[in-house]
Image (cartoon, rainbow, N blue to C red; front, side):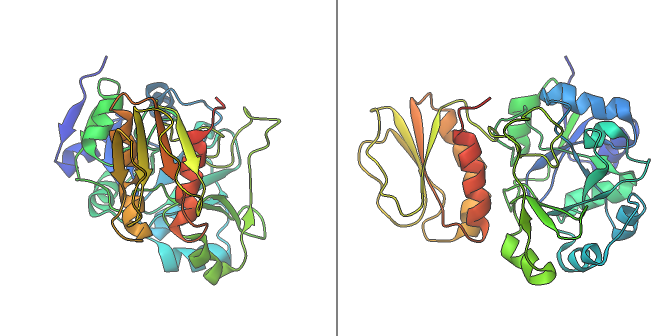
Length: 326
């Protein structure tokens, strides 16, 4: 059992990362659980503390394009275009790695996911630490991602060394992951950057899905397993433009958004936004899921989103949260 410290000092957190310790920190997407990506022993502690399978790779965070380029064997024109347009920000690019990144980070695959976060605390931390930092979401594996320091402590308190408190995140969804390992860029995970914006820069994205016949094979990106981001309470997704159902029991919760009236009879209702703003919905999604999950409900019904913009990523999270597969 580890005494998890709550920090506000960026220099102290940077020193802990350099010393090989595990430090959760805020990004604009969600809180990440950071370790020195060049130290296999530290990275192994990420997997251990989260209960994360070794076939699920990690994303490496740095503070500059030059640092990213030093970690990859190839830097295609598409990478330059996307980096100039969207970094810092919620975009991860998968590129051929150098030997500086150990295989434990990439699940033995030749490519590594790299990102420059936009959050000022994260950027300050990465600059002061001056190391590549491997960082998945700072929560127990397959659970709801954390958007506050308290969420991290609730899930990983006692398992990690420290949490750097930078307040609530703003985007609220993990980064969009795009692979540049082949000529045509591939969308591996929708996220906080809508795919339409990426396609406006590099053209159509190929969609990639997990092979259901090989669920334990190394995944090309995190967050691609059938069940992920899941509350303990069973969640059911009601597709976009489908009428919300009456509560299945008198102790059910509803996750909804926009001005449409909720059906009567729900024991708890979390409304992600009072209007049709998907940005607000995304920022509030995981916190609202946590709130409903904490109320000892029988079931959660979630309203879906249009399959465009951030709605694509939110539907992805809700479908995986609703999956009964393990």
